[in-house]
Length: 438
Image (cartoon, rainbow, N blue to C red):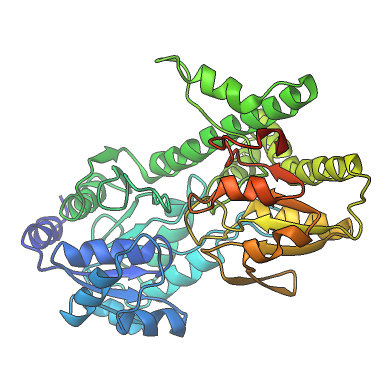
């Protein structure tokens, strides 16, 4: 047993440990808030001055955080933010929650993780716990993070502790948030696992599942999102077939989910969005090639899901043709830009790929999204319009995000031509003949 284990665990029990969180985005800021709410003194680290300044002013920019809670924690001195990583020397733990995107070749880009780890390593001290939360391929913690942290002579599992605990943030989820979502923790040694698990148990209400290694925890996270990716691909492929057969795929899924066992409902759509589901399977696919293993099912699901934005625009073109109109020059109103309903998160939103395909085919594009008032994509700046004011002047209305605040009865009634890619109009009673579904 390493000499710092009991000392650190005791600090977690009496909440005297000082905690650091690197990355103040969709994962890091909610985590920092929960740790501060649990009674800890928390320092958030980020390279973006704007985020740091907003946190220190008590101004929230993440939808799943209660504005007043953030402000109260900052005023109470429980939470502060900085761009100065030298303050790492003052904390007992650091959780790294930075982006892990794919590069242009759909290969893992660990530049943010590596950069953050090097910043931490510069001020790493004995008795410290480091936890990586960023989703990545199996082996990252031990093959990439550990060597960087050990460069100055400190030994993992003896002088400091290292673990992986995947984030499970689901933006907009009303039931499960950071506080009550179960956690998985895998450390480089038994002590690493136990110390990291104790940290999370002192903060969260959800169960903490200890696994035998960081690689198991890393693979577990990939499995979660690959499972969803593949099943969404199945739903999308069913939608393509049902459309050709003249069958309502949404009704088929609603009927299937009445079975109390053996079936879990997944739904089709204009493509995949969010940071995890569209990206994580590619991490596994890339790593698998190192072992001369081809993930055929994952590759196939990616092909299906990647095709959906193109299919949506092809279907829209056919609907316009039925009105003796061409997509070239048609005025199209997109309803919803966020990657899923009732949030402002646009990461990997399929609506952006739909936009690309619409513009490629000559459409004139406007959009409405109450959660995304403006955005910039492919060098073009867009501003949300009031859909009620423009709907009579467009050729096609396309629902790309099914926000619950939309008045679907009015949208259906007023739209000259409607294409619903999300089944947002499922409860509309009147004018149902006007609804064209995915």
